[in-house]
Length: 90
Image (cartoon, rainbow, N blue to C red):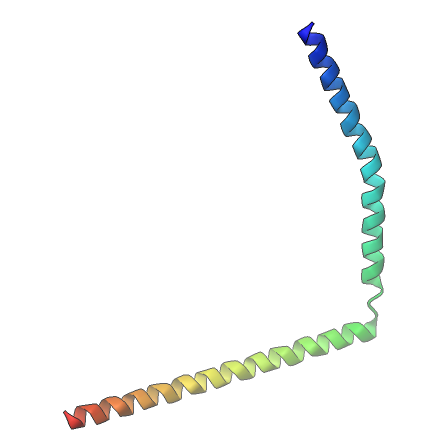
């Protein structure tokens, strides 16, 4: 008796899973097609604009790195001067 109940439960589970798959698959395909269409709408003008923005951001990052290096050098120089001044005063 228990074996029949288990088999019926297993069969019901398989039917539910197959049914959900049959319903969900077309929905997922439609959604993926919609996403593909949205990305195809990006034209060359928008693509060029994005590329130029990325390149300008990269240039700004390079400039910030350069400024940070200069600030580190100035800081090291200042530290050395302070150390020399403290050594002379001691």
